Amino acid sequence: TLTNWMKEKPTLFQVVLQGALQIEKNIVAKRFIKLFEKHGVHRNQIPEFFGYGLTLLDVDDDEKLLAKLTPDILNAACEIFKVRMQWLQGVDSVIYDIHDFYKHPEEYAEFLTKICEEKETHKLIAKLVISTNAYDSESGDTANAVLVLEEEIGSIHDNQINRYHICGNWSIEYWKSKADLTVCIAMTLKQGIYIRGERKSVNIASFSRGEGFMEDLYELPLAIERDGLFKKKLPDWHPDDWIYKPESFLEGLDEGKFGKTRAITRWLDYFDKGYLETGYPQKDAREEFVLALKKYS
Image (cartoon, rainbow, N blue to C red; front, side, top):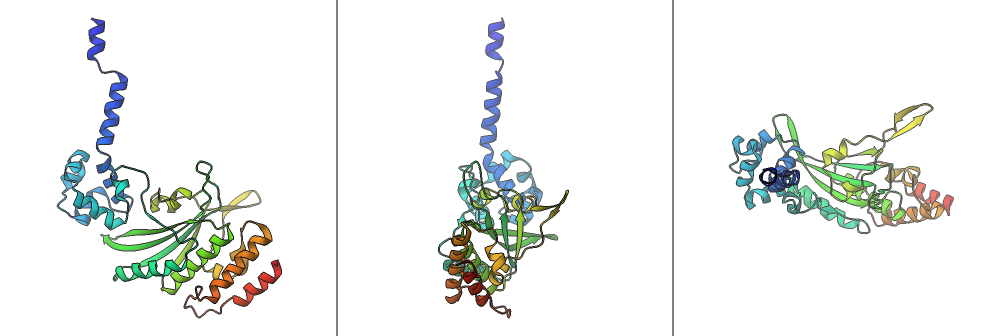
């Protein structure tokens, strides 16, 4: 009968629910694969790069892989790429622990020294990614700068594999935050670490919270400017300009003259404490910042 047929035939809801349960069941395996692929290791290269007894047959199928993922393997994967176990287990969406040095930039030196001591012969470079779109309409978060330390941990064939140490919670519009971030830039340079800057045209607050992979951050569109009817990429920008060029350091600050004077005052305080030493032979810019302070006071 029609009634019996309806009882025996799975409903659309049951099919959807079964699919959702299957996705949930394999979420750890899916995130395990995603973790490696987002760091440049194809799933078929995981046994070669990672080891831990995994085979090509294991990584080819999520269910087979799930049966192999012991706590030791999960811990090792988290340690290699410095990601949170809660994310790998499917508990939440925060991938990376964020290192926050706002109001305490002096602690960044100790943090950086520890990484340099542990990296052995691996290469270490830094990227400062900032956004020209300051406001996150969904969360209200105004964080718009992420300082990323890229640590080489190996290679697979010709492809270099990195892990990332992420320093977030920066707002380059706010005078106090921008001065503190400038200290971190100087300390990075003093360690002999090359730092490059990138400006993005979209909001990056989610990355500042640790909720996105660095590969996805780097692939976001670059900031542009209008030249008549045309758009063009903004000129190259160097983070160390904030140490040597008052006009670059003050660019984009909120709160008008108050924000500028407070930013310069904080910059000068850090300079006098020795926090802005880079080890470079370039002449310091203290006098230029003093003149800028007089201009805006």
